[in-house]
Length: 456
Image (cartoon, rainbow, N blue to C red; front, top):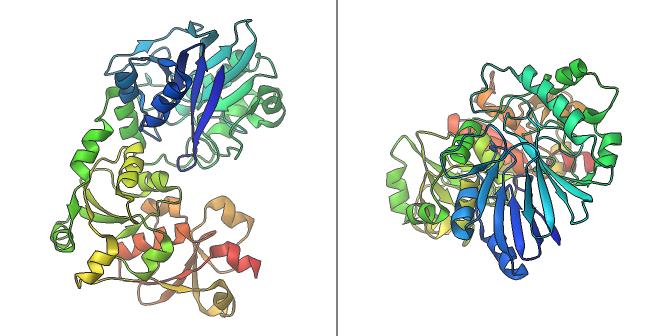
């Protein structure tokens, strides 16, 4: 028997592969399916089921393509409506995977169709529960992300359903059952998830506020619905893709892996709806980049930031990447439903420079030199999130959380210098590139961010 967690840090997402006696199942797979087919081949098993805990909003699942490749049956919980062939399971229905039994437990609240899958061995011992976005480690799923029609139900109604689902369906299970959620810290599907990606249910009963027996239904609803920030704009489209279907990755590669020389890129940029997405490291972007390019580095939380900050519709994207990273970039974009890439800069920024095209740069300053400046006489922008800023910040700094960029008001004025930092330098360069694409402003990146500033 095998239970393997396949965690993708970029999305803070956990998919799962379970195998027993020549049969396998995959739970909440990512869009690129080769990992799951390789595991099946290595274990000599056939993928029998693809269990989906709900219609995901933060990423595009690989259920459809994996079903086509393996012949597996896609399973959803009660009330799910799909635009493709899928089996809609009943509450408490049992599925067998080799010698394992998998019980579907309907747990509405995060969404109406949300369900968990409880795995037991051949002797009936409960081993693990795959909770999707119903129960995280240290938190529970937001009740405001359901995108399919909810018959007039409010987020308070859904939060109440989630309270009942947790109390009546999950908490009665044995304390030694392992909890395997769909997300960890960094996901937008919860508010305060732990960095841990699994735990025993017994530990969660002791440490997870949402499972506190002294927490009333009313208090739970208030806690869950207070302080929710608007969901990223790409969430509704991802739900639509997951519930109605999408193109396979091979089709996306055929359309988007189109090499463009510098002159071709320059011509494309004359069109208002074309933008440059530069996925290189912030340090490389700072040295030289195409004017107006947006920098979201591939080696950070790339996909969630793309989804949160870039326009989803009415735009075409040309990518600039590090060496041989074009295909990986397309995969990560496809994970969050961005399929509008029309090509990539062949040869990267070296080819742009060699062609004599105009480049831009971002001024930088070391944390040591920044600390020598009189903070009362300079303009400082802190782009960390609310919690980070509340914990500690520089007096007089302007707070512009990167996650709120689309809704920011009272932006800094041009004609002055602004020193910008985040925790380590990744988010500050995203912010700088975004703001400079909107206005002519002099922004200086503080290398190493707040961490380096405070370390000195």
